[in-house]
Length: 106
Image (cartoon, rainbow, N blue to C red):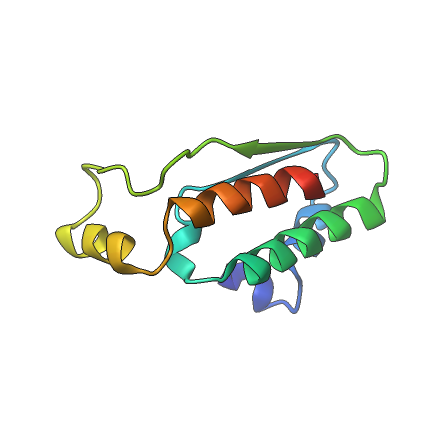
């Protein structure tokens, strides 16, 4: 995320600077590791969608929420990353609420 932030842009502004015809937004790969509360995460997500729609209101935006439970063991995570995922304070309820919130924003 530093690439666009160093230029004073939000991620949505940076994406739109690339002049896309459509955008696919997928969350869930590592979003829970940033430690956002549900309302903070959804506010960031809302800002992304608002920035995209401000420039091209009719542009297709596909929203994907493909990770049902981010705690599922992953062979690519270190033991410390797995521990952090389990004790981070986020849980499947967080994931379910954020999934629902993203669908409502989309």
